[in-house]
Amino acid sequence: MSYKLAWTAISSLLSQYSKEYGPDILLRLNVAYFFPSIPVLMLQTAFNDRWGLAWRSGPELPGLEWFVHVW
Image (cartoon, rainbow, N blue to C red; front, side, top):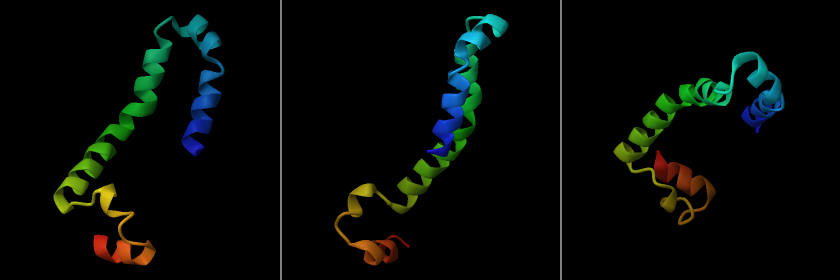
């Protein structure tokens, strides 16, 4: 939720930013805001693929049993 708060604050001033920085400001803001998370997402995907930590195994085991099963 906290990352959405910053994005809401930034996007609420989008019309002012487009006047100051041009019409492509939304694209530049999206790249600047979301691009840093791509390496983390790629590492998470590789981690899940390597150790088989699929979400489908979560509902089969309750709570602590699922955590022990995963690790």
